[in-house]
Structures are given as structure tokens and as C-alpha cells.
Length: 431
Image 1 (cartoon, rainbow, N blue to C red):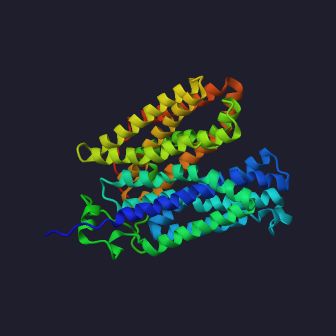
Image 2 (cartoon, rainbow, N blue to C red):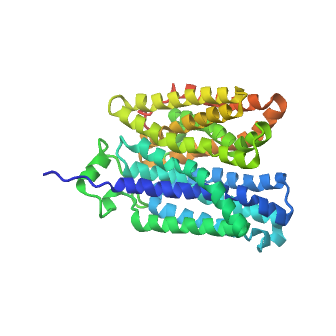
């Protein structure tokens, strides 16, 4: 009787989902606790925007280094280190206004420094989620695995506002940073205890599961160590048209995501005239749609690989999701009835995340052992788009109206879909 495969790889994916959720909670907690912070230190909204931007800067700059370190040293240790790193600085956010840096660079400079360092730590998260998926999941399971891990953004977005607000109201704004920081350390302690870099290192993985994981890629290294990792050929990576196509498409993807992250709530309250409480409730719907649709898109792409080529499987899901995203955002921006607008825009967000697993698994498809590095490049592009979006959206709204500002996001989705006509994930980088 043949041995029944174990399912340890799915427990690894569940752990990534938990870390992903914590990642998003620790990213947005300051936007919720910021009300108390602003009152205590007499900070205006422009100043708070500067503090917010410090996180994005650190997050964008350290995407590539974070991915490279994961490729070189393995995601188990790297993720453990960075989660502890950003959890410490999350806790220190609570005292940054009274920290030793204040006499040197002022209160705002102190908060900016701490949030920049939170961003530096979180930058390594998603590239190393993808490195872990590349190591642990079968070639026909990777998009689903990434989709589940990336669903943490939606889960975190749904949990963070009520959870952090409750802590802030019940105990104080500082306590919200203490609690979320401790949660991060607790989650990553479980990760470090249970996870391994490669499935063949895990004592609970049997031979049958290992055979599934390796699939047709028996010769592909499942992970690298500092001693065995090949040196990165930056010339070949930077000369790859496929890399730049994926980075360009994901930059547009990032622009759209940050419209939802930065402006969707205020759009509902200020433009669609919802109350503060109803606006907060309805603003979670796009993120719930993301959490649901990300695994579905990954699953469909992985199933298609079993019948069609990898190129068709990735391209079909990406183009379908991005075109539907275009349509729903465009219609949502034009909808006069507020609830209809929310539903349509939420579907737009869901179909954007429908493509999430395809984007990340495509980095593995083309980069193999350098998955983390190329993933970092791709996600840096998203955060360049995410840096532009919060500034461009209100400018466009003021100049041309909110309909036009939202429709620019639809245009970005359409252009990203067009780029996928030229992306071929079977063209691998020979590194």
C-alpha cells in the first residue's frame, strides 16, 4: 500500500497567512491610533502624512535587500528576524514622542525614524513569503499558496480597525502599539518553532509529500543556504524583459491598491456622505473581497497549468482579473447610488487581488533560485506606484473630480492587463 502524503506544506501556508495578517495590522495601526497621537502632540494631518510616508519609504527601499537575504540565508531565519525587528519598532512607536531622539531631531523626526524602521522590517515579508512558497509548494500549487498568504492583507484590513480602535478606546493609543507588537512576536515564535527552509528538512514531511512538492522540477534547488547559494547575476536579471514587464504591471497594481488603502474610507465619508461609523464599516468590503478572491485566482491558475502551458495559465488569469477590475472600478466611479458604488468598487478590488497569486508565482516561474530577489524588485515597483497614488488621487479629484480620479485606477488596471499580453513566464532567467 502506497504511503499517504502528509500535508505539512499547507500548515506552512497557514503560518504565512498569520504573519501576513500581522504584517498588515502593524502597518495600519498608526492610522487608527493616530487620532490619539495627533491630539497629544498637536500634530496636523499634513505632519501625520509625513510620518506615514516614512514607513512607505523604508518599505520600498528594502524590498530587494529583503528578498536577496531570504534567497541567501533562507526564509525561516530571515522572517523570524524581521518580524521581531518590526514588532520592536511597533512597540517603540508608542514612546517615540518621548524618546532619546527627540532632542536631536524633534518629535516628528523621532516618529518618522521609528516608522521608517518598521517599514524596513516589513519590506522583507512578502518576498520571503514567496521564497517559502517556491521552496514548499508543488509547481501546480504555488499561485494558490501565494494567494492564501496574500489574503492576509484583506484579513488584516478587516480585523485592524475595530481591534485597534477597541484597544485605543479601552486602554489608550499607546497600548494599541504594545498589544500588536507582542502579537507579532508570538506569531513568529510559532513560525520559528515549526517552520524549516526546505520540506526535506522537516521531520514531519514524508517521502510522498516531498515527491508532490518537487513535481516536475526535480532538478530545481528548493532553497539556498549562505554556503550553496549562487551569486546573483544582476546583469541577466536587469536585462530580462520579462522582469521589467512584471515590475511595470505590478507598479500599476500598486497604484490601484493604494487608492483603496489611502482614500477609500475618506471617499465614502466626504464624497458619498456616509457617516463615520458606516464609512468605517463599508470601507472593509474591498479588503474582504481581496481576501476571498486572492486564493480563488491562484487556484484557477494552478488548475489551468495541468491542462495548458504555464504561459497561458498565468496570462489568462492575470488578464481576466485585470480587465474585470477595470470594468468594475470604472462602473463604480460612475455609479450615483452610494451602495451600488461600494459594491462595484469592492468587486474591482477583489478582481485585482484575483491576480495576486499569479504575479508572485510568476517571479518563481522565471527566476527559480532567485525568487526572493525578483519578488523584491516587483514589490518595490508596487510601492513606487503606491507612493504616487496617495498624492495623485486628491490632486486629480480637485482638478477633474472624484469620478476621474477613481477612473485613473481603472486605466492603470487596463494598461497592466495589456502588459500581460507580452509576459511569458516560460522565459526563465539563466542565473
